[in-house]
Length: 143
Length: 143
DNA sequence: TGTATTTGTATCAAAGATTGTTACAGACAA
DNA sequence: TTGTCTGTAACAATCTTTGATACAAATACA
Image 1 (tube, chains in turn cyan, blue, brown, green):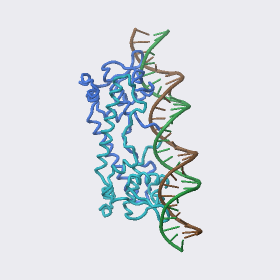
Image 2 (cartoon, protein in one colour):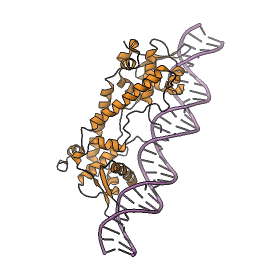
Image 3 (cartoon, chains in turn red, green, yellow, orange):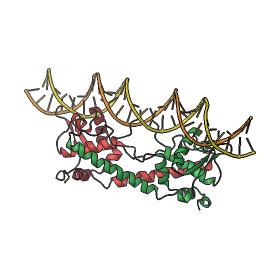
Image 4 (cartoon, helix red, strand yellow):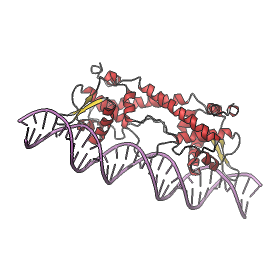
């Protein structure tokens, strides 16, 4: 499988939209910058749209723009819009419940998973799309 | 693909080994607790062994035990032994280098990836296998 | 109203990852 | 020498992700 790069693509897309403030951007245009197919872009835009991060319009002269200002969009908003937010998975079949250690470890791992996922979310929440714009030198639009 | 649960299995395995301090534990025994095939266990043990976290012996009465005390094994040691340590992937094809935004975003994402991965490692480094033993009620062996 | 454009989604193929299995050589204890 | 156990190769099954084609629905404009 290809490793999951939806968060990377989503941040890329959101940054492109931020630099085109107020304009409708077409999925073909975004696909050109991200270097992928327009449908892949539209799939991610669909998730971002359900998370109320972008607004799309169908039809001629349609396209997508940000739903709010770059400074009001945190990176964890984007992360949770396109990812299940799990850094590692629990064993899908579960531990042998007849083994006392297995049972207990399973519970510990479940708590640990939540803590790690929360940590990642908190770290990402320290940055907004506005910060990303500043990093790439679009300080004006970040305001 | 099945989601990657190697870290979960590795912690489970290491905890089992810790509760059998000083004894050789067979992969079949570990497989019984983790609820999977013995070869899957041996594959993970192989990675843990290369990271000097466990020591295995072949032959009759062979098996595996911890290479050091539970309190001297941090969870990030285990994490890095069995995982590439990347919470999210960069876009494998890379951005379109003709697009200035794409080029810049790529660099920002690369730095962000490193920061997030470092954050996860630091969080995991706050716990040792000894802490896990305490959580499941094996306080004695954690010493 | 009619046409061109664009999204949203279904569907399918291709590539890759993970897990589960079987098989077997090599190491080791008795 | 025999039996046991690890280490690893090889393969199938399953699932994910990405990429690609197709088309209905929505929309702007003439």
